[in-house]
Length: 428
Image (cartoon, rainbow, N blue to C red):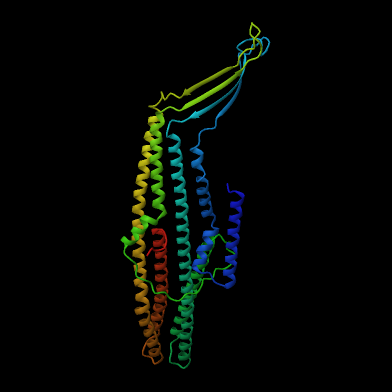
């Protein structure tokens, strides 16, 4: 449960989150940094994980403390014929207290295991923040691609309309073919259908981004305009893996889980050692002795301990259980290292593929195709190029431009995955 002050802090963060959203919407654009900030401040799934970490942090002091002492009140040897506290010499009113004392080292091991588990919860919250930031960035860049693709399709529609005008002029003067007019209109309709599909994809992606930012989906999402990017060269996998070993919360979480398993195993091995209970009681007696003197009070002290006579079925089985849990934690740590290596290598491969493809399209294929379209349009007007070839080349140009934005977007999404895989921004 959150304390009152923690709820106030959470409410303040949500208020700031709303103000940032309103300001970004008032400005008409949403930058990628703003999107990440909004998600980290307002996402309820992340808040849930962070609350669990806060709760786990309160656990070590609880399990490391001694059990509460037990205060007892008793009446001993009370005669049933009269219920008189002074009739019998052994009748007494007792006030007692007892304290359980676990075997040396047990409390410390419990507290240390809980502390390591709490650190693992904190690492899990950090891991969740990384993944949330990664998902926001990927959604933002996918939305960026869809915006550019829609703009490209609209530009292609404009070009096809100009082709239709050229064809219609030629047809009216008897130099063009009716089939060319119909072909241009068919291709234009195809572009309209493609725009509808892209708009549907954009609405879906915008809804996903709004959900990640924990914002209602009623308002539109307009991205901050940015210029075409020159994708940088990245270091090799080994450099990124070295950072991941130090910075990635997933590895720290698995290591803390393994260390906590070690403490639980050591605690289980101490399970066959008995726990002690110290007891003390003060007995008050009423009445007088036969010689007329007052009866003296009694003091009782003692110690008790549990006897692990079922060790084969209990303590030994717990040791086996904790040992298996430790092996599970060890395998989980090894698997996390393997998973991170795979994530780094795949992200790097996807980034390089997108980078090379974007560079080839932007510097080679698209300029060449633009020149070809311009040349074919001039050739068509003097009947040296057929209209079908011109339209097909224009469609190829449109597809190449969309492919460029997709390659750029996929490279940036791969970069976001890479940064999440190594625990954050690249350390110099």
